[in-house]
Image (cartoon, rainbow, N blue to C red; front, side, top):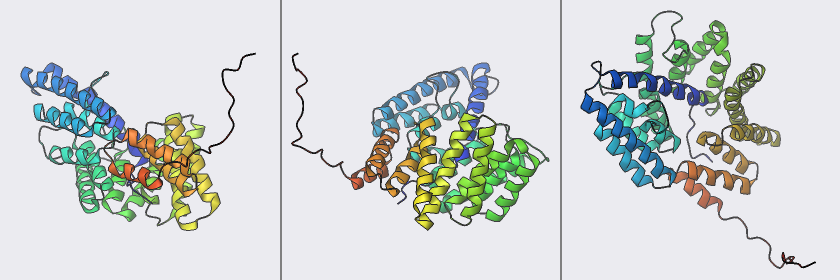
Length: 349
């Protein structure tokens, strides 16, 4: 049973950092007005961010249609980079983060399609990556591969020198490896990941995690994926990196789940549940982690636990109708036994 296509576990930190970097740079254009926008455009952008905040509030209330309406208003008011990626401080979240956090990938794909070709939008790497991922989640595989192929072309044009780093500080070769794999070039991606682990020791765990997560669901070489995921977890543990450790534990748990799909052995699904519980414990608001755990719980026969996690996911991702369908499929919890004697709480002594 699978209702939500995977997204790169490494993408959570990488994309968040990318948005953070863009969010720092974009206000400079907005504030200094150095050819980036007029005073009027700056005011519209500020108002658009306020409308994005209102969209976030509506999603939190479960009002999906109202949330989408506010997203559309924000972009229509000011179609600038800053509106997409947000700025510093509370209440300045961009529309991308709002939609990603609430799992509205239909709307995310819709707004990013024109954005990737909009000349006013800067740093197309992040936008193409998010667009390709949204398409993948929606099951639009051919379009997704095309988006990542475009991303690969952008990366190779932008980072031609040996040892080049992206704006987020990642080796350009690692970004290329991720794009290669998601564009369908498995052999090329494997070579690139191996090169990153050889040339960039500080990013070896990141590369191993990315390769394991992105490749595991295809089930081509799960034994290798398991070793890569275990390596990443070990590295994060020894380096005392809690954020990376939680993400890598989620990946390792998901690899074990993919192994269980083939083996149906109790040991594999128990390992999956164990590691996925650790991931959700550290990242309870991360929808992908919650979905993974819910799926593994159901596979392990823990239906009540699966239902709880799917309900949590429905609150996080109110726009995802498939999650609601899974809750309905699992059904209501069994009624509590009746006829059990109870003690009157107001017993006088």
